[in-house]
Length: 563
Image (tube, rainbow, N blue to C red; front, side):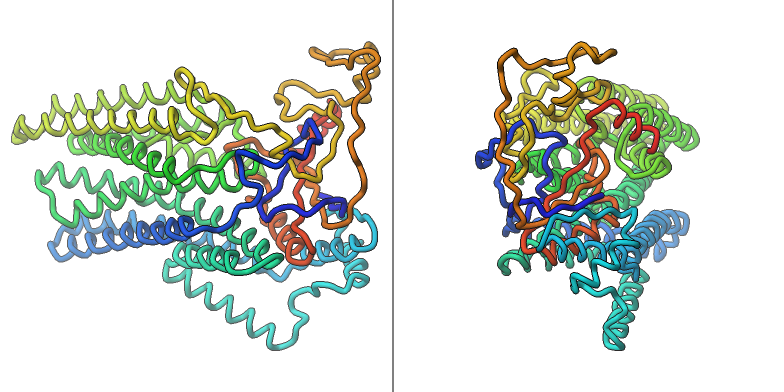
């Protein structure tokens, strides 16, 4: 990773140019605002998310206590297990993230400060590979941002108090609440302050929103999804609905639908190469997942009320098939191979209940295959329950259950079409599954200060190798190229304005940019995040982030062999 001070001021938005912008035109954006601010709807959205979290957790605990008072110890134990174990897993992961973010290591902070100090006078490069050798010397010259632990006893006491406070928060299973409140605080601060403080608060708010979205999505499918199936199965077997059972099941269902839509919104907001989701689209997506997951879980509960053993076998088989399908698709979400496998296994759990996009490109075929599979499974599970149900179950009740499953699935499909046909951020659907993207030139999505030759191709397919301008002029001397574009004879490429600017740093990350729907590396790699935050707080303007462009076959081979 390298940083240079050759940039112009940009917005507090994560200005990440595409891999290889094709033009140097700097027309102002028309479809996506160049500068996003924290708004009142964003604040209300966070407060509603807190309400959903509290209603889900409180209703489950209240129901568990009610089971205990009724001496239904088996139901009490299962309900409590699906509350405690997922919560502990999320708390451990959240505290691990906090420990890394708040650790005493000063490598990234010292080196980043050195870059800022050196960039005032001249262009300078920074690499994490040799930060220990060059960063210490430059930080001494720059005289900015001393490392942690050098502020005396007051600083040490403050850090100890923060460690104790976070430990108490996580012991009491309130990490999600703290992160929601912290994101709300950062968003309000970014609204009240002016530059440069506003930019710094907005960056931190985006990072915090990404963390809470990942944690809550994981918790929802580890806790709310099995809790919903459990309570519906108990209701069907007992043939009566207790008020607390209905409340708990409803809260779990809303939590699942809410977190799927919230995750997609946070992901799109974090990427400057994608248009953000409007709140109308988010609400419709919540309704889509609400009815689709409702039909799915009700079919599960009906089948599980009669075939407990076969239901477990079915769930494991479906999860294995979905996980293998996801791994076969070669996702690119995490920074290491083993993390990617674990992530794919977690997405396999999501696929047990609903659709979740994990690959770039048109999802028509994949979504059609998944939708047909889920439809056939729902029909088979509901039919098996109807044929082999308890003889004491009245026919009227059985018909009502079948109609509820069918109507809920139909409503979920209807809202899915509404979302893709009318409210999708990239534009309406033309035919089944084809997105008619709005014409947003790449130069509008690029940083205004980015100036690259017009013959550099942007976002090439992974299976094809790109040629740069110097290679194209060689023409016939290159062997093995399937497609090669040569400039017209006598035509000269326009020379862009490459006047050097020293108004702010550029963080160059020595990795290709991850494709949507993956998070950018600086959102999941916490070392990059710490460096960006230090640079942003110390630089007079927001640093721009630029990922490596895989240009030559040699570069592609080196990347593939080092990953």
